[in-house]
Structures are given as C-alpha cells and as structure tokens.
Length: 63
Image 1 (tube, rainbow, N blue to C red):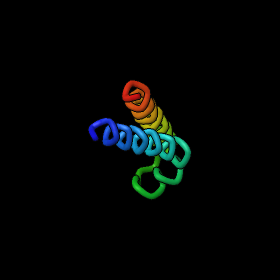
Image 2 (tube, rainbow, N blue to C red):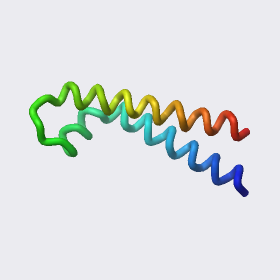
Image 3 (spheres, one colour):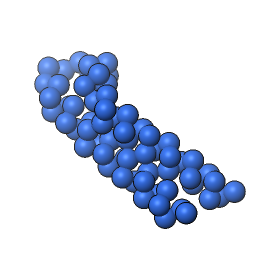
C-alpha cells in the first residue's frame, strides 16, 4: 500500500514538473504581473526540472 502511494506521488510530481517546464511562459503570464518575464520563465523551468527529477527518483527507488 505504501509503495502504491509513493508511486502515485512520484508520478504526479514528475508530471507537474514536466508541465511546469512546458508551460512556463503561459504560467508566468497568468501568475505574475511584473515586467521581467524572462527571469520568471527560466526560474519556473528550473524549478519544474528539479521537481520532475525528484519525482523520477521517487519512482525509480520505489520499484
């Protein structure tokens, strides 16, 4: 049961990270209202990359 829960958490976090990398420009336009969107976009892409890596590691070490 615990393995299944960890697997679901890993899949969801990896999915969230990939979505953050892919839609970083759109998310920046919706969430933030300041002028420099390039820095916010790159920050969201880096954060999404790390979240995706953590999710993939949870999946890998869970199996």
